[in-house]
Picture 1: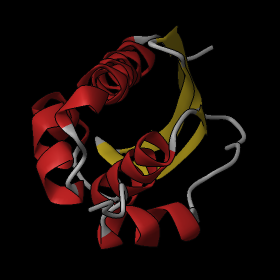
Picture 2: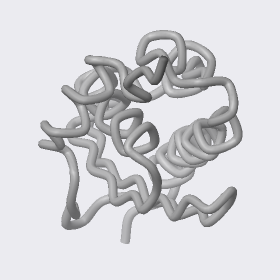
Picture 3: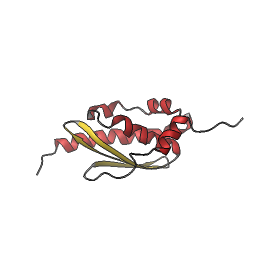
Picture 4: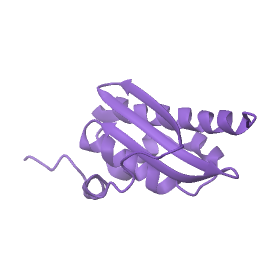
Length: 126
């Protein structure tokens, strides 16, 4: 029996990628690992994430995970980015275990974005 490799949630997030694209004047990070090219960009104000965008070249699971991440974390406090776990989003989207490495790229990007937010807010303004 051949089953659908994509859960209904993966299909939902993959089709509705409202956070795909660029964000002017944003902090951004880019990673190229595990066959995944990923860029996350975000803006913050007063320690809260104002907007998030992504560009991802990878399988539907990766694209859906990026959209799910952006959808969930927009508007939240920046420190919450350190709590993002690949395993949590894999369970939520029913991502197969063999895709773990690819979703870990997203986790690395999220952590890097959090550090970049902290670095940018600590920089003195000109």
